[in-house]
Structures are given as structure tokens and as C-alpha cells.
Length: 96
Image (cartoon, rainbow, N blue to C red; front, side, top):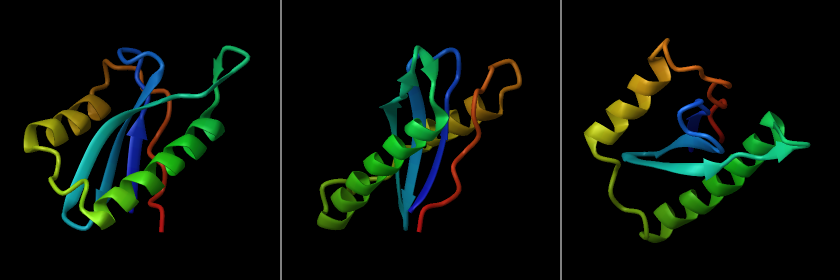
């Protein structure tokens, strides 16, 4: 499964996450992890990977069957690429 995410100031406390498995794309918010009130990138990536396992299982058993619509997918990349939006972290490498 390929996982990409970003954390932007306009979405406090959540990472926008794009999960891709075969032809299925699933985009959702995942709560970020804070340690002592500060964004914890490593712990957030661990949480996103755990959510990814659940997404992969739901795809496998047919609970998630539809891809994100093209507008939702385009918005993910437009926001991620917008230089006026402060992005705090970069995408995770694809999970195998």
C-alpha cells in the first residue's frame, strides 16, 4: 500500500492521508500525535501506518471498494503543492 500524507496549518490536529492499494484510493483525516504539546512526527507516522493496516484490511474484505472521487484526489495534491500553505512534514515512503 502506498501512503502519502501532509499536515498543514489550515487543518489543525489532523494529517490528510491518501492510501492507495491497486486501483483504490482512500483519502481521510488521521489525528496527529502530540508529545508535550508539540507535533510528534514519528508517533504520527506510526499511527498513520496502523490506520493503513485497517484500510488495507477493509479493502481486502470489500468494505472499502470505491476510490476517492477525482475532485477529492486533485484537492489532496493541490493543497499539498500550494506554496502559500505551510506544510509541516513530507509524505511517508510507500509501505510494503
